[in-house]
Amino acid sequence: MRRSQHRIFTVISVLLLCFLIPITSSGEETLQASVHKERQTSLKLIDTDKHMKRFTYDSGYNFEYPDAVRGIYVTGNSAGGSRFETLLDLVENSDLNAMVIDIKEDHGNLTFKPKEGSPYEDIAKNFISDPESMMQVLEEKGIYPIARIVVFKDSVLAKKRPDLSFTKNGEVWVNNKGEAFVSPFQKEVWEYNVEIAKMAAEMGFQEIQFDYVRFPEGFESYDSELQYSLGDYEDSELNNIKKRVEAVTDFVAYAKEELEYYDVDVAVDIFGYAATIEETPGIGQNFSRISNNVDVISSMIYPSHWTSYFGIKKPDMEPYKLVTEYAKVENEVLGALEEPPVSRPWIQDFEAPWLYSGATKQYGKAEVEAQIKALYENDIYEFLLWNAGNTYTKNVDYKIGLE
Image (cartoon, rainbow, N blue to C red; front, top):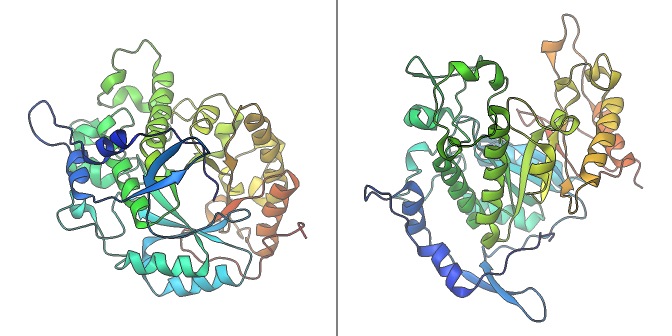
């Protein structure tokens, strides 16, 4: 398996990490503390080199990092339902080798039931009723498991804890899709999500992929209309744009450090256009700074999600050209980093009818292969396929041009 270099832990530091229970100033246990009490971890001694040893968590599973990750997105419903067999067949009978499975989904719910007494019980859906059996099947079939955790888009937590969200006129603010976000400025939100990531690592997932690691889209245009706490960033002399960048970057660095003990790779999904500018003005994503704190960076480069970038008037109509032009930019940005992460973009396997007044551009074998071919030609060999309904194009050559 590919793994980033980790900090050396002593036995004492590991024990503190596992069992130390932080207490709030009022004497009440924090959410993070109660999760630490619930969790029972095991230790495995790993030789890191001839001279140093460190302890790390052992989930008991044996997964190998593939030659290059080629994966699909899988919802909790699909992972726990009859469609799982169809998706397993798709991966087994192709050159795909990985699944990105929802563990905390877009509304903010867990897709499985945690242990009884967990503080996360009230946000849990029983989509994946037997996570252990699911992981065993993935292990047997050699399918690399990645846990997707949606972070700051979280209507469930926002409704439960408006103080951790953005409010307007005393009500939790929602975007034009009816979605609420919690604030990246709030470190309690960081802890809340990283504890879920730790549960996923204990389930056997080899990689944690954080999605929606950002402020709401267009935040710069209505920032002044909303009420929210800046937390530890209150006294910062940075302007609002840079405060948002600091908060998002700091969360990623925090998550990476907290997950070192679990020996999992850390990935972040990021808007593709973030690679084309120094920093996004509203959502707080700085491509280079996030990349410096992760093992894998996954840009969402769906052609349908671009406007007239790179001189392409209708990117959805030209998937090969769009991905080619994007890849050139990303390679330049990542090439400037001392230790760049693996690039593993999300590519499009769905239609975008909202772009068309007439017939919609159909995405099938040719369009999916065009995106993959463009990546390979620019020395990007890993990718993930997105289809929200998990209905993927058949008979795609996922190694097109490599043989």
